[in-house]
Image (cartoon, rainbow, N blue to C red; front, side):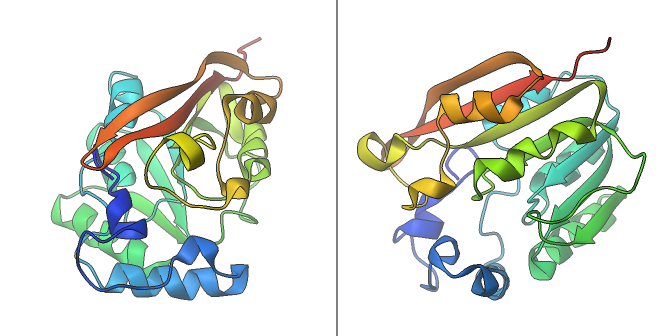
Length: 221
């Protein structure tokens, strides 16, 4: 992630060990490939939060947060440093182990959960003030199922590669089923009150990437 998301590490030739693209693999192979990718690098992604996530969430009052598809835990650790009570979910035990090591080093508490984002769900009665879905390369129905996990007033924040990036941008997965358009995210938001849903340009060393962002909140009434 440039700006916290190095696409060239994943889909280009920025150096390091060349491994198969996990996002193109069969679902049963993705976990093993991500474990392999995380094991081959100190950090596949930046250790700092994505700039857009930081701009959106950085000033919000802390509460209970879910980082779905947490990877190496950079957002989970960052949120914990701001006072959030964080649960981080990812199917890569290798990625989460890196995040846990960093949280311990910094004296922060995060609940690290090794599970598949496609099927995991919180315990009965557990609701979140923030559900963060950052560059999770799964279809939008995975996003839509998180709506019921929000507390009244809680926000769903999605940041990821836009489908138009395939033709007009750089980096990111090449499977359109794993990319989002603003229209798809609006549909995924369902009954949530949408505060922001749009494409934006993210400069990288290889040109501008086209990302999408959704900020949608569960009504309090």
